[in-house]
Every structure is written in structure tokens, then in C-alpha cells.
Image 1 (spheres, rainbow, N blue to C red):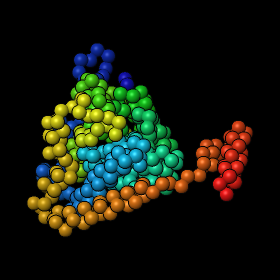
Image 2 (tube, rainbow, N blue to C red; image 1 turned 90 degrees about the horizontal axis):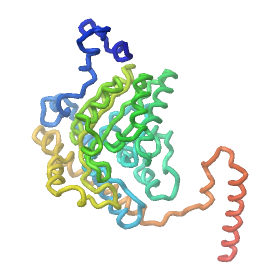
Image 3 (cartoon, helix red, strand yellow; image 1 turned 90 degrees about the vertical axis):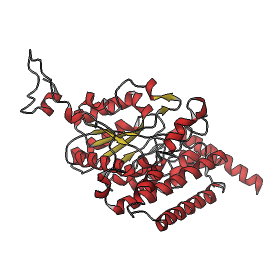
Image 4 (spheres, rainbow, N blue to C red; image 1 turned 120 degrees about the vertical axis):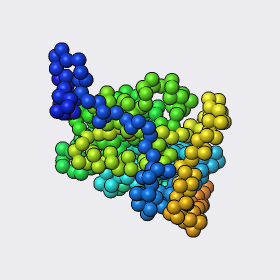
Length: 380
């Protein structure tokens, strides 16, 4: 008998016995939903808090403008790179909003917007991508781990923190955010295995935007869905329309509550689409067609909210204008900050590397300090 048999054994399905021909265990609690969960355009919308819907809309609009302005700054050379989440804002915003203050977020390099929605200053969140100062924000201040550039390495980190919190009796849930490409990495599989075995309070959110840079999902995975992968590890898998912000919020809230109450991990697959290229170094027209992009633009998360909230009177012209004004104010702040040359301290290279600097680092720091002093003397 396996761990799975013990965990899901019921009177109706007592578990596999030697020589039995019936199911070894009941897979139903672990299988993904028949279709992606939706709230917009369904009866569930009228049961959703209007204040939550308005806040989701406001943050989507501000987040879209943030993506657009950061992309422009990259093209102007003000940022080294910016992996935009244009078209994926519902996942980014709803995920951060569903977390509680004591929880931890473990983002990938594409999740800058989720980091901002979590409470990190919008300019500090871009510091890493500007390339001038470490992570750019204090991870402990908002319980937000650094943006992870290596694919999926943040997933086992999330499991470790969640397991430690559980052992300490802290009501903490960790959220690991990944892309569909990250599910092809060993760290992803190891993280899910450990999470299930340890019953860690962690949730994995996979934003399936269809491509790992230029590789389509069909060339990455033969599984019926990425959420199905959860079954192999013994945790529930959920499917959600990743452009339906209240649906993403509802599914993740349920998964967080399950984890917080001792129910263990959940894998959530959000079906969404990366409207922009992978980064400014990518030409998406080489691997996808315009009509494919156009179809997803019609399923845009902001468009969906306006289409379904206006008829219910939840969204009106005043709120739309207020959100647009807030978004433009943020964009103006970003332009003002990033068009100014940063004042850099070369000696900061040696900070935060070791608690006790090595003799070699101390020697290098002294050498650099002497060179800087000599240069200053020349220009004096």
C-alpha cells in the first residue's frame, strides 16, 4: 500500500489489495477541474464581493501601464531587460492579493508585477533588471523572495520555507510562481515531490502562457494538462482561466486556505497568454501567428472585466478614469526616475556578499578604495 492509498482511503474505495482488480485509490479528489474555472460570465460573479472586483480592475489597469512603461524603458536602454506580463496581469495581481500579510511569495523573473502588487515599491522592483544594485528590495519587508532568474529554483525554496514554518507552528503559506517552461525543470518535480511528502503549506501557480520562450507547450509536455502532473505527486491539481482575475483569486484563495489548515500543497495551472515577446531580445513573429495573438487580445483580462462588470453597475466611467489616472501617474514617476542617471557607489560591490568578508575581498576592497581616492585627487 502506498502513501496515496493511506491518504485517500475511504469506505467506498478501501485501497488496493493483492489480487484486486478495482482502482488502487480514488483519483477524483486530485484530478483537475473538467474545464478551467471561470467567474466572469457565470453565476459566481454575482456572488463575488463588488469591492474585490473593483480593486482587481484598478490593479489590472495600473499593472498594464506598468508593463507598458517598463517595456518602453527597456527599448530606451534604461533597463537591461524586462520580461513583460502584458496579457497575464490577472494572474500577477490576483495571486498577490490572495496572499495574507504573513505569507511568502517566491516569484520568477517574469513576476515583477506580482512583486509590486505584493507591496514592493514599483521602482525598487525593477532595480535588478536595471542591473545596478543587488535585488533592489528587502525580501523580509514584504515577505517577497528575490526574482528568480534560473527556472524553477524558487520552487524548492518555497517548499523549504513552508515546511519550516509548519514545524514552527506559524500559519504561513508560500506561493511559488512559475511559467510553463519551468515545469520541464528538475527543480519543479523535486519541489512538488517534497511538498507532497512533507504536506507543506505551499501552492504552485503555473502561468501557462503557451511558450517557453519560443518552444510551444506541445513540444514540452504530453500530459493532458500541466495540472494533471499534480496527481503523480499526490496533491490536487486545479485548472483556471488565467485571464479571469476573480477566478484566479478564488482558486488561489481556496488553495491557500487548504494549505493553511493543514491540507497540504496544491498545483494550480492558469491558462493565459504572453501578448508581448519573451523579452526585448526576442522576436515572437518567428514562432507564432498574428491571428493567435489577436484571439487572445479578445480575451484580454482588462477587457473581460469591463465587459462583465459594466452591465452589473460594478464598474463605471468614474472608476475607469480614476484607474487610468493612477496608471499614468505611476508611468510618469517611472520615466522621471529611470531617465535620471543613478548615483552608484563602487564600494557597494563588496557589501552583502559575506557576513565576514574574506581576506581576499578585504584586499580587493582596499585596492579599489585606493584607486577611487587617486582618481578623485586627479579631478580635484
